[in-house]
Image (cartoon, rainbow, N blue to C red):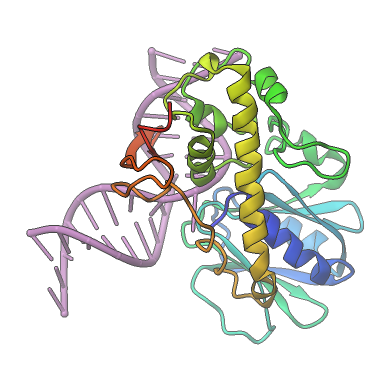
Length: 278
DNA sequence: CGTAGACCCTGCGCGC
DNA sequence: TGCGCGCAGGGTCTAC
């Protein structure tokens, strides 16, 4: 399910429920995810731990605990994190559970096991190898402005490959996954194969704006199912988002009537309209 | 330093 | 109906 908008919607739905709530304990049913789940550390440090905040960095959900640790959860390709009644029957691939003082449980389920559950010291979170190389957040918050063309211009220095690959490189800009990379390029009218080094500043401005719009729209639309997320249904909302090119090979482009094509970049499908993306 | 490709894993939909 | 194939929203590692 998850690109940045889905994680952000999840964060917003979980925050009001989890902040002030206490995680009594973690239960690991299967510990072989993308990396081994730190079973002993979770057992040791997640005993009656009060949640002080729920944040996000890139596609990582950060559940901050009083006492100085942060529970880090990444959903990979197929991960789901849902709040369910304590007596809800177990589901297939429910690998980790967090039992809450209220009696509910937070269920982590992930068939493909590309996800991640970690416990890291909050103070040094961004020095951890999962975080230290990460680039800028595309969406502004508080005093931080949204991504703009000037910033894209700065972070593209030394890059040569196709703009599609650049957009998905988390060392430059985080949170733009395969769907929204395709959608943003279409919205900006830029061909995915165009070299990042050969895009004018004016078009970089458009690209940055397109990324911000696409992600923002997805969050806004996902937000309409906020309550469903909180109730633990969780799967709704994703494909409600109206997509222009992703998954639409052979269909005609809404903007110019051209035929949408698919090709592969680095093992990932790219959808684009060859007539209005240049 | 960069980029391209393989790979981790299960489930689903499609064509035969 | 059953089976094999291709494909899936993530990230990381290796080879060049």
